[in-house]
Image (cartoon, rainbow, N blue to C red; front, side, top):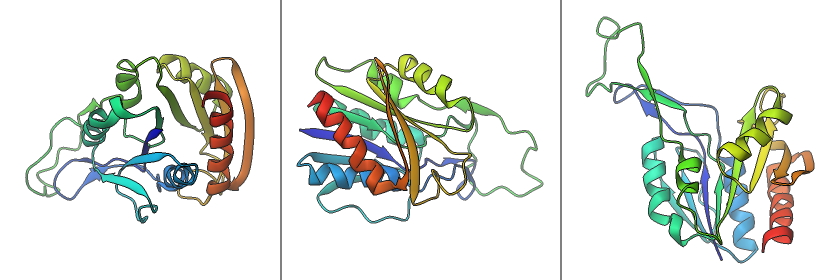
Amino acid sequence: MRVLITAGPTREHLDPVRYLTNGSSGKMGYALAEAAVQQGWKVDLVSGPVALPAPAGVNRVAVVSAQEMYAACADRFAECDLFMAVAAVADFRPKYRAEQKQTKLETDSTLALEPTVDILKTLGQRRNAHQVLVGFAAETHDLETKAPAKLIAKGCDWIVANDVSAPGIGMEADANAVTLWNRSGRVGRKGPAPKREIAEWLWAQLIDAQF
């Protein structure tokens, strides 16, 4: 069985040195990749820029932007049995990218943005009948409403949600606390706990139900 996992942030460049990004450390996606290898899965890990070593046995593909992450996933999607969209992909990118570093005098104070590709939704529209899709939702409020709505909107089978406004868990942290839904409703909650423990719990839920 093969799993395709995205992890970390994306960087959307304004010029060669400045970019839009977020605080994702990649630790949750990497923990899931490491746990998958120990479950005997073949793992492709498409990773944005993070300060983490590749887990042993994982095929890591390093990318920077949302478009690069989409291209890397699209090349591998047909081969996977399970797609886990863990990465915190930027929703927008600068509409115009300067070829050279801009000075303050050259930079417009108004930044024009355009949407990035919705990787999970776009690939979900190409899925085969046997493929399972797992989305991740990082929210600051209304998690119980937004996460199930995202599951439906993006065509997922499962969605994992966490409140990133809570201190000490989620982004840039070693711990997490998650709530898991499938198409039948809420499955359960786990945490706060180390991300590796969260990863093992999530794999147990998925394998028991799907594989």
